[in-house]
Length: 211
Image (cartoon, rainbow, N blue to C red):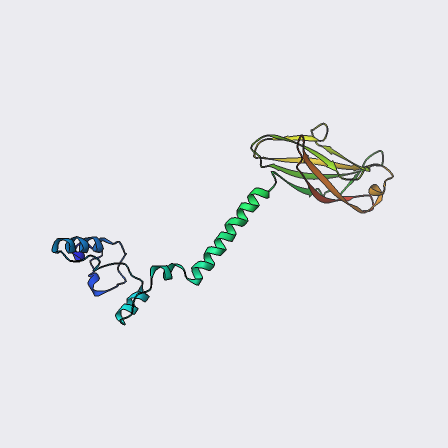
């Protein structure tokens, strides 16, 4: 019966064979025959090759738990659990806004008619929240540099839910300031959520006339 139902046409009674696809049809057929003739089931069953070798040598097969709880499986379980915990922690502590700053290098700076120096930057704002949010952009701890945005009045910008906004931003150093004269000045641009406490910053360089 086991040979008749095998889709590969092999005789499993000859032992494990390369052509076997472990479909289990021979096991079911054999158990049905054993039930009909009043013999105990289990003449054919799944077994690890190491257990088959032990059984041929007259030894007891290993317990199923010894196959499951091996050093390798325990190490793999711990590693995957660690990866899962790390992903969950990263998900819960991540901010809902992301920003990147790309300075415009052609030209590096422009001297305006009143003597002030202006730099241009492309800022990418990513709102990862499911609600639209208004963000406020500002320059940290530097009264000599003013921030303006192309096509937008003021320093607030609205970004839709789960959307990205690319915005051209200008930083202008007032005339006769150290920032206008120096070759470069480190600058930190803050992005804060209006009516919220969350905020992030990005760092860049302001190029003056000494560039």
